[in-house]
Length: 192
Image (cartoon, rainbow, N blue to C red; front, side, top):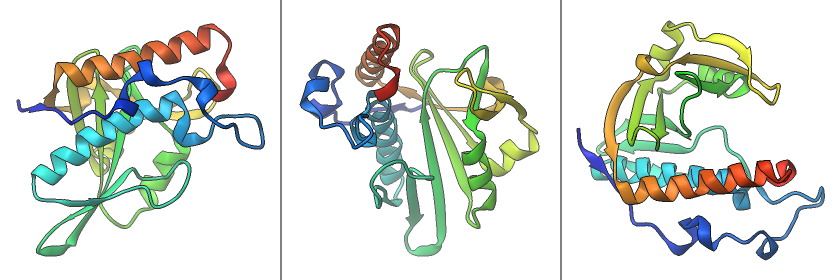
């Protein structure tokens, strides 16, 4: 398997994230793009976007402020009809399963273009991949996430190991995970 890496910027380092440096929104929460969970996800998205660009795709992202239903749209010239939607989940599995928010699952089902899902598992130092059309065939089980939100869950071994993650990127993702765990432990759930 190929090893994926990406150039990391100073803002990608969790050691440089200081909550006091960020402005809260009207409800007293960090803006979506400033949250540690979003910053961790951005690293996974950069990794996959770079992989796709290296394969000849033209990619676009970040067209709205806040959370978006799809992380990356890309096409491969000269075939402009080859548009695909890419969703990247930068998280480790829980009890041998990955989960997708039920609302996102329904959004992917309604899209008229192919959706590809990439799961960045820093624990296993592996990127997993599956087409959403294949995921539907697995008939994911429905259950709530620990926070009570509905989700769709499926076994990690249903996914294809796609590539290895460079150790520098793994270390960076793990630092964000450690920061998120520490904030939860300290009761900072509102702005994670």
